[in-house]
Length: 618
Image (tube, rainbow, N blue to C red; front, side, top):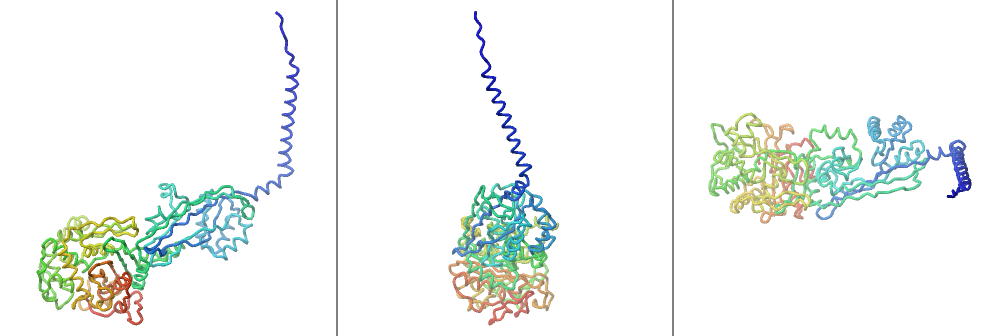
């Protein structure tokens, strides 16, 4: 057998050539690195420092909020904010001095904002909002010294109605960590609704933020755009509010403290919702100055509280039509039943005075509503007891939230023996029931609850759910109240305004639409005998209430007015309601001025209210 030996020399030569090429390439790469790092090192270092990446948040414009006619209640305006890139700060103290001198806030606030930004150094932080042209020019002039700062265009909320819509639309605030964990669409630094419509409909109004990654030079100028994720704008929100009615309510309530609610009794659509005093919503459109926040929190009139849905008041005599309807409905009283009012009744060995010291004479249910006779309802409360009274109140929705699409609504209070034992640690006494019969004592309601209750009185006995956005509407719920009982109560409320002895008869010749309603005056402190309420300190004066509706024959609008420490419902709250009703129905309420206001000047008293005329009446 013959063995064949291969010649390996060609393979060895190719291997040697490949090895030489690899060694040559390695030394060429090494030489290039030496040139870049040693010979040209300074040049490339300067270029690396001069060009850097920035990730810019792109805010999503929030959806516009309009009234029922499409008029803007909240819109957007262009604004400029100052971004801080914490990882690029070279001298923190110097940057703080510059920002303080720029006038965006005091030094303490600037330090707090910078410290908060440093905790999330991988993201730019908004260090100032709503920059003026002078501030933007100062930042541009010092761009080389403070490369960590950049002016960024965005949008901010604008409020055509001003404070008149503050509680209605609510406030914005920076999203918190707990919200970020619940909603994947939210981003750090995003503004979200904190109250009002802005909070309830955040999922519609908010949109989704975007991002822009760019390369900038040493002066902060954009060199190139590397990637962009466009924001998704929020959707518009059309409400049931009528801006003209809202403005009329604000004008009528100028200088007063309280709330106005106007709604359609047929559907529950809210046409106006006002709480006074209010805050300036423009101040909440960007960074809120700590001093302004402290001022609002310390204000004894509580301008941050939405009185229309959160404040609780004794309903006073505005409760009387509700109780009358309940009594007529279940047969506790017949339409012709009457009592004789001498100005005082004796029940359980205790005297209970009617507001009219000389009495009203013989009154049936209509007259008792017309003249707001306390004696009639004292006897009614004695005869039926607390349990039946509270059942009637609950029929009209008192004692529980109405379900309006606003956050923080109060439930109110309808008392019971169980409540008294649990909360007060004592049983309920029969004498307390007598006071509840005229809306005093431990019974509390919000203005929105009163408006809903009266809507049921005048719409055929249906309990509506008040709403600000049509999508939140629900079918009215029947109460089972008979039409005959409701008609009798409505006849009494018509006489309140148009009767010869009505407690709001001064409105009859002044209000263009034929309106009806009920006055109420609730005591804050027990007044000493012989002391006029006008002589009391403002905070001890009576609350003035009026709940009215128009047109009386086919109601289209119900208005509830509460004026804290305003005095008398007939002379203070009723004229305000008249103006709102007139505006809602396209009329003009000439001469409708609360007592103590000049018919010619039309200017309300300042707080505390000036001397008001008239004696104690409903």
